[in-house]
Length: 171
Image (cartoon, rainbow, N blue to C red):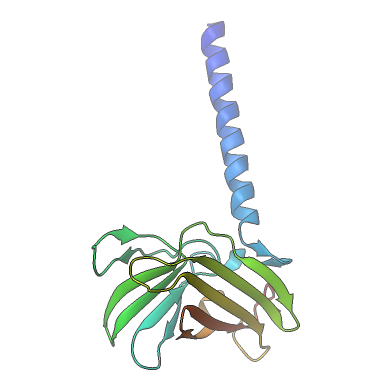
């Protein structure tokens, strides 16, 4: 009886430690330079290219959908995806920011800048892939995370995005 009680006690303690550890990771994983982007978790922002294509961006954690790689057909997770195509015929080309990558960050006079940097991959002829997210406070914009506006473009091996919102975590 004592052995069974001890085992139950150990299992309960392990579960408590796991839950507390997960909660602390979840709460701190989206805090950058004093800006808590947790309200943007599970929000996908889409930017459309000037000559076709689109980008999907998550400001907090991985995107909820997976990228089905157009060449390998593998299902890949990530925080920023690049697509080619037009209208409703988009095909995932690359995961620009891999899962779990922490960006460098700095507060700006009007919000926050996040910079993700990694070595290139088979799809891109870039030695270094850089994604720069400028989060900008605009009091005339929506405060709802899902209504934040985003624009973006590729400049050689750097992808630049501007996210505009009046959400308190950006302003």
